[in-house]
Amino acid sequence: MGSARTFGRRPGTLGATLLAGAVAVSGGCAAVAIGTAAAAPIPALPGGAPDFLGTPAVAQPIPGVPAVPQHPGLAPNGDSGIHGDGWMSDTYTRPGPLGHNTRVDSLLLGDECGSLTFDHAGRIVATCPGLHPGLFLIDPATMTVLGSTPLPGRGTAELLKPGAFSSFGGGAYFYLDNQDRAVVGANDGHVRVYAETPAADGFTLEHDYDLTGSLRAGESLNSVLPDSTGRLWFVARTDGLVGTLDPETGAVQVIRLGDGAEGEIENSFAVGVEGDVYIATNRELLRFDAGPGGEPAITWRVTYANSGQHKPGQVDDGTGTTPTVLPGGYVAITDNADPMNVVVYRTAPDAARREVCSVPVFAKSAGNTENSLIGAGNSLIVENNYGYSGPDATLGGKTTTPGFARIDIDPDGNGCHRVWSNDVVAAPSVVAKLSLATGLIYTYTKGSEVTDPWYWTALDFRTGNLVWQRKSGSGPLYNNNYAGIALGPDGAAYLGVLGGLISLRDN
Image (cartoon, rainbow, N blue to C red; front, side, top):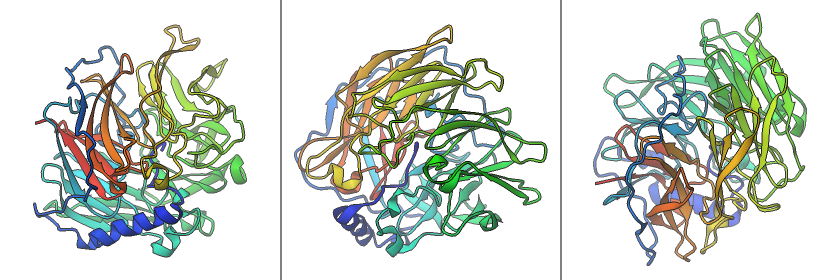
């Protein structure tokens, strides 16, 4: 979402019914108890699926991985957005659960908190798009809402129209800045900056930048991020809109990359610490740097392999990944070939040979991803989302095509190789995470029992083997539907699901 998507695409008749039912159960965000330990948990279907499978892990830290540079405009690495940092690495230096005497908790909201960040005090700051979109401040220890503010939404009628759930703008991506402010590109074409109240019981609107003069009718913002100078960059899905915003003057400058699928931007983007910005369209990967007047300027662009197929489980016929930057001057995406490839490029403006490698993953006509790659040093982790067309695809014991793989860049930088593949674990749509402290990849998987159990799942980074699974709950309200896992400063794991928010911690 690669990224994270919001929380489904077109839901279909049954999917729409489930989403409406989630709101009916909770009464919507307006019914959420604020600042009270009496918050309701997400209801689960009864069933006989086991609570725990496998063996608790012993931490096996991964040494020698270069640190992701701290972006000056973002909250500390791991805390700033759905992919954790400016490089979109999805990698944490801190630990997650090891599977010892685990405890699961949930918070019923009726909207899915798909993008999670953490402020300086360890509180969760989350956008929860859906029928009642909002920005939430949540106590992770008690799983209670401390405060919230509504975000512009599209309304129930719009959300239930065909195709409405394939739009991932309007706050699905947001970031927390270096002052604990949430910066949100909203559905109404405004970029809003929210500061926490002094009492940490909600938010105040600090800035409101109106970009509607640069957008076309019906266009909404996909994502907003700062470059290393503090300039804001933004993208919109239609016709490849890329723009810059000077937060001091409000000056906006935009370009468009092409009409229709040629320029469509589905995901977020990555930002480096030298002004570099990496954006993928349905056909190309591009590096941008600001021009002399602060305008978006293309430094280089490369066309990736594309079969032209809109595969089951894809939003469209392009890459499903937000670009991932790696140390050593590399950036990686997946293409849309068949079979799909993990592709690595050199970031340098003057590179004599742009492509480092293109390595096929998953079987022909049975592989794609709609989530960003995990990047750790010279290693990349990719998951298979083939067959996830929305909540209906995982009902009644159904699940999606399994698959994880690790691809490493060769030490000489002239190629890549597959380290392992796992063809057992099926993670329909989660943004998985890696902890360098535990050596575990944290993902979220679906059981095949008719009661539809969902599992927190840990894989071994070194081997790809399944280590353990812990049931979070059963039924459609426990479907994460493109939300991303977050590892908190408290060592717990958090994830948005259709019913709200869930957590897992060791006791």
